[in-house]
View 1 (cartoon, rainbow, N blue to C red):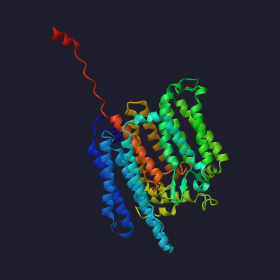
View 2: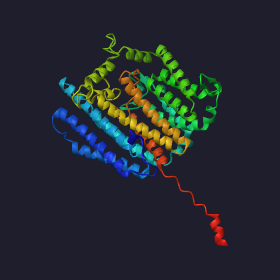
View 3: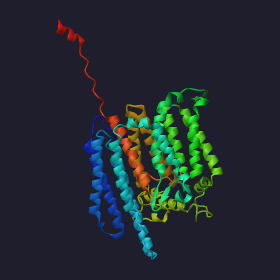
View 4: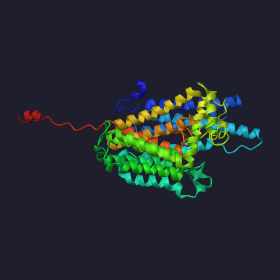
Length: 468
């Protein structure tokens, strides 16, 4: 753990370290790809060489872009993301093979495979990743866009609610923009825009929000007049919940704001206030929002005979699959994760748990933990308050999304419908996470870059001696 927790000293570029880790991530992906093919055909995949060269070229191109545009950035973040993205492609391909096998057994034609499209989204995501590094050469420039980011984020959030349900609703959640064969989740980009807004706003208002109020049970509570921002964020999250039936985004946005508020002010009372508001909002949603009430009942009674054939079928099958996987899993391509509805999106963690077991799931979570730790380290070490808040918000939001998604699949909390970053199928999620990674690398580059040397101050005594 000490080697993981201790990043390289400032001023070190570590080009070789990053390239080695990137190549390791590529090899790991190809080994998993080969394992899946061997389980289905007892032979190497026919396109192993071409696919391997293509994926390696894509990963190395991302590495070259980082070393050119952000030479001092943390050398671990990019390889970790490539490993997750590559494993996600393998898992989606594995589920495509299962769907094809089931279709042929039923005498039906196989539908369109998802893995090739996910590969296209990967290319677009990495292009967006490089584009962010090219355009944003200094993360502090984003602070001037604080209120622009707020407007953009709010517009993207409310856009699905303004569209007809036929163009915005999938599985009860009104979070999509769908026209023809194109679909996109604007909330994924809204998340990033609002994190920029939160960071800029809290930097400007931090002194006011940190003013002391009354002391109650050892906690210094804020003044009543300063509760406006957190109440507004709470009301906005409830509006998302009631209008769009999006439990995941509601929890994510409110959690990010409260966490960044605590980081900005250092007052634990904000965490307590946020927790109280969250509990009150959850209680109200359970009683007055049908979609949320159904999710809570599924969480409490996943094996109830009255619901297991319809509402709780997905969660029950996911739990059965994880139990089948045990500690070390059934092996890639040797389980039945395809029995779980939406196994390549909402329940991809269940796919990992069944075929790679608890050990494999813990390994994936360790990679996520590594990204979060490195992101928080960059935030702490950066030299400006805006960069600290933005980096911490990005890292915490990333961690919260992983916790909420895996927590729902493992029945720790109710299901929310969030995707697992870099692993789940979906273009909007993948692109937004590559953009998030670019912002973290930009902040990391600024934090690790050597400070400019100050001009030497002439020695006045030596000058006087010379004049004499």
